[in-house]
Length: 148
Image 1 (cartoon, rainbow, N blue to C red):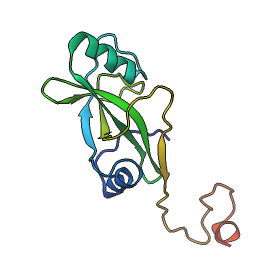
Image 2 (cartoon, rainbow, N blue to C red):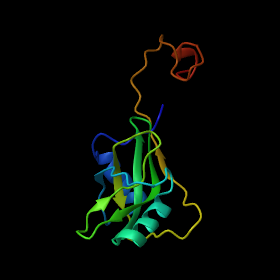
Image 3 (cartoon, one colour):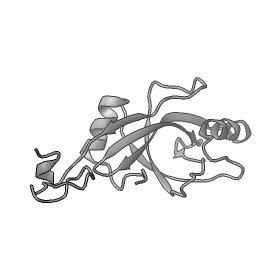
Image 4 (spheres, helix red, strand yellow):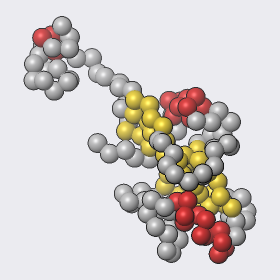
């Protein structure tokens, strides 16, 4: 399973953003706008260099990733803010994604080093019949394994 940009902003995502990150902002979808010599996984350096050469500003925040029905993850990120106040993600993505779900952060700034990702695990399980194989992968019937 690979984490990916959520298809839509769900109540679960909004709650995660409010309770775990920043209750004062809301997530927004941003199209990826790759710029010339920007490097993969170097959003802070890319934005800093782009500002030096082109003006504008930086907005720190979080990319929101998801594996539906399994977990949500937030990765600290920086996007470029143009002179019109629009957010542009100029950092190419290794998986080729064309847009991100971005949560602006009203407080955190890049202080160097690594900011740990924020994760929330959850499982939405289907009801398993007692004689069906257990979802844990043991090969046993559910009634003789996790359902005992």
